[in-house]
Amino acid sequence: MRDEWLKFKKYPHIGKPLTSNKDIAWVRRYVMNPEKIAEHKFVPLLHRTLSQRKYRPQKDALKNKSGKRQRTVGSKKERHIYFPSHLDSIIYSYYNHLLTIAYEKYLEEKPYGSVAVAYRKIPIGDGESGNKCNIEFAFEAFEFIERNKDRKLSVIVADVTSFFDNLNHRLLHRQWKRILNRENLPDDHYTIYKSLVDSKYVNENELFKRFQHKLIIERFKPNDISQKELKRKRVGKIYNMRQENVVAFCEKDEFFEEATDLIRVDKPYKSSIRKSQDKEEKKGIPQGTPISATLANIYMLDFDERVHAEIISSKRKAYYQRYSDDLIIVCDRTDEDYFYRLIQQEIEVKASLEIQSEKTKIYRYELNHDSEFKGGIVENGSVNTNKQLEYLGFQYDGSKVRVKTAGFSKFYRTMKRSFRRGAHFAKAAHIPSDSLFETRLYKRFTHIGAKRRLKWLPDTNAPSGYSRSTQVDWGNFISYLNKANHIMKEINKDEAIANQAKKIWNHFHKIKESTYKEIPKKR
Image 1: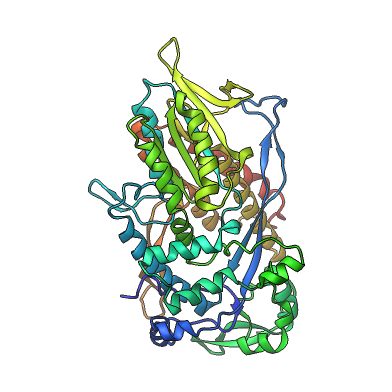
Image 2: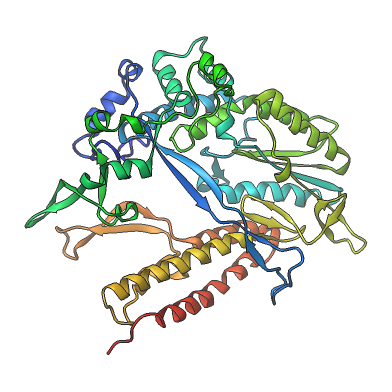
């Protein structure tokens, strides 16, 4: 059985890709050799900017039939992701594996060991297999509220400002040593640390333009589909790379001979240079490497310890959970100001970070005169019941848990794009209107593809041409809704989330019908 950390990546990068059969032996020997890693030279990261449109409801807009206000397109949210080269990625994965073991062992006897839930394998328990995900974590927070409906509760939901970009390097170094129980970082660990805090990167678009005339692609050998070979080819547009099966931008030696001018750094390394250029102190680690998430949890140890100590104090019966840079506190109304100030102060003292004040939201809930547990968000000193508690993709109104409408909106936008893509290729290939790649669309966007099962992969030796693999088809968005409905049913006492999913089938066919009208009719 292959080590869990030893997974070959398929995205194009600098250098030829690794293959599972040919390279697995030497890669394992190299990565697990501390002396080799201590001397390893990391390839610049590949930088990509991901943009996501935000839709926000207008306060004064008219409501539709569902009682929801019209939404407008807001500013785009940009995320900067950094991809390591194939070998570097496995190195990071292996050391992430080592740090995860050390982190979990460190937390075994700590009272605050359960408050950080993101990027960890926490067993579901109660006789069920698998690990918890955001659904179970959200349920735990809502369940605490459900158990304490006899109290006047406040819920604080906060977000850390540019979390990964602002991690203090000295604190990260100190916490790394703390987890390993070492006075100094071992040479191999220090090399990993330096590669992150002094990270170099190359913008993906610039790298493509430099090598687009000779990108490395993978093709089947002529007259032999069982064998593949690497070739050079020009690709006109960057979004055609996947279609052309591009596996690398260039050779590693090629890059350092022809393109070192593309290497970027956000801040100068030397403090003297930074001071002369009036630049701030270096901080942050790249988001996207296999080790970044675990390091973020390790970094927040002091903050988690401090907040949890106040949570479990005899004077205050409260609840605290942190999912990466999102945190939630449920407390008595009388402790609302105390905990709000606590997280604002301690995040700066213990982690050298800041809480985004504009994204920090406070909700209040209590029993009304009809013994109904009601409330909403606090705005301008009063409770707005039109806005309910939102956490980890769910909305809670005091009695029911539902999936946020934003999740459905994103799903429908993806659905529309897939239909438009199908129509585009149908038109280009002059495919008649009865051939809109329906099987693929039904599997991706309806209950037909919601069942989780083992994949069947092409196999020339099998009688059917396919054989059952060990890879799992994890279903689709409806699979997620079904799981959420099952877990949240204990709170909802009904099929509230399943009822949300019922609209998907009709929505799918409306988009399908309108898309067919764009394709030439079969003659």
